[in-house]
Length: 122
Figure 1 (cartoon, rainbow, N blue to C red):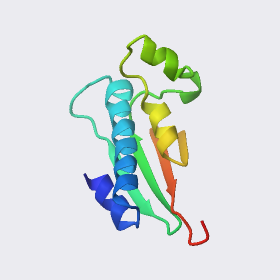
Figure 2: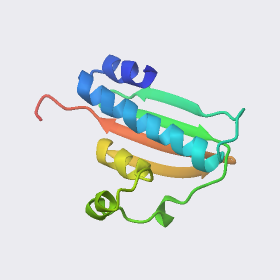
Figure 3: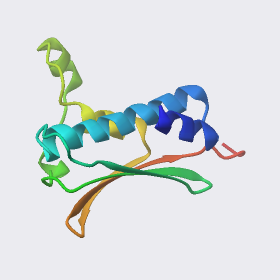
């Protein structure tokens, strides 16, 4: 809810703000499931920064690093025909956001999600 409210406050319409919130939810879920392996008592830090022309969200953790380049390419047609569930977090984030990057700095993982705002000239 906070990510959605922050996106709306940054000028995104309700639908786009909801999409941004979904991307943030997917990023934090990935941290809990993959970096922290479901362990309780771990911290996920979310920083939201309205930079004028774009909204930047950093999802930060101290868990295991996951190399996004090692993730398999998602074939949605095959995925749906096999009735699979889960495993679409990064793919979904990349479809919603304009930029999704991962880095490791100072023993912390940072997933940076960026959504650009529409400009008056389109």
